[in-house]
Structure formats: C-alpha cells, structure tokens
Amino acid sequence: MAFVHRTTMTPTKLELLTGWLPKQSWYVGDADTPELVKAGGFRLDDPEGAVGIEFMVVVDTTAQEPVAYLVPMGYRGAALDGVPGEALIGTSEHGVLGTRWIYDGVHDPVVTAQLGALLRGEAVPQHQSESDTPDPTVTVHGTVPGDGRGDGPGVQVNRVLRPAEAAQGSSGHLVAGWTWPDGTAARGVLATVAPR
Image (cartoon, rainbow, N blue to C red; front, top):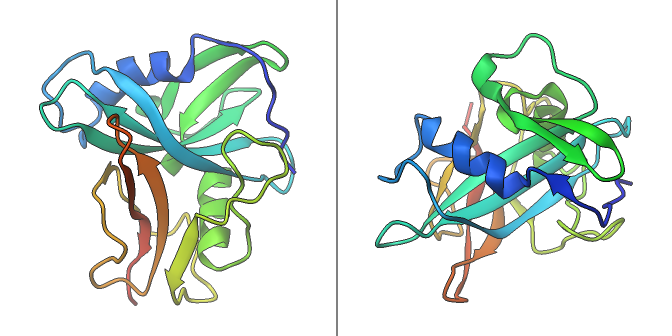
C-alpha cells in the first residue's frame, strides 16, 4: 500500500498546476493564471510500489462560476521516456523522496493501467491523504469488459467535471465527489468506458 508522507513539496502541486492547466486544450477558463483550490480526489496503489498515483480534483475560482477539473497524476523518481512534452506537469522537490517528476496521468502507463484495474473491480481506491485507507466514496457503476484496459481507447477521463451520477451511453463509469469553494458537496463522473 502507498504511504502518504507528511512533508513539503516545492513547488507545490497546486503551483505546478496553475502554470500547466491553462496550456491544456480542455481548459475552459479565461484567466492565464487560474486560482486553484484542491477540492477532492483519491489515490490508487502501484502494485510495484514505484509510482505514486493521485486523481486530484481542483477548482478554478477565477471564473464567475467555479470550474472543477480532474487531473490524474503519476509521481515518479525519474523522467518517463516516450511521452509527449506536454505530459510533464513539472518537477518538485519532495521533502522525503527528493526530486519527483509529475506527469499527467493519461500519459503514464502505470496510472492508466491502474485506472483500468479500478474500472474492472481489480483495484481499491485509496483516501487522498491517509495511508492504507480505502475510500468507499469512490464507486464504479455498470459493467466493464473483463479485457477492458485503462490505457486503451475505450476509457475516457473527464477533465471538466459536472455534477452527475451517471454517464450517457457508457457501459461502466467511475463516480467520485468534490467540494465547491462555498462548501457544497458534489459528485460526478470522472471516467467512462465506452460501450463496445
């Protein structure tokens, strides 16, 4: 099980995302520098114990109506070869583990494999900030083919989140919650498996 360290990261994840998020094609904000707050998320375990996996929900508060984004992240102890340049969110100095390369999880094969495992019921979502603590609020609905893989074209990660408990036309979907800046709780579909 992954161990969540109580330490510092410099720059912080939110600082890295503030610079990276506006450069993404799915960013819907107007501001070049969003004001991000951590609003929710969960972790998955890497069976090999080498890659930290976090699905973080951040809310941009600069817009008139706050916007929630999902950013899956893979934390690595070395650079990942064979991925596009925009896949690297940035590097950060971890107070315990040293330099960490933080990648957009949709480009990290360990992250996508574990997302596929979660959708097939073969992985257990973990609490975002507690070690070895399952998060029962993260749920998978519907059926996912036994050979469904998270790194295949059939899995779609929803980047801009909207409150909804079901996905249109999906044979399986992942639902989790986040909290808006005013304290209101929301739940939405984070990822879907397209029907075959």
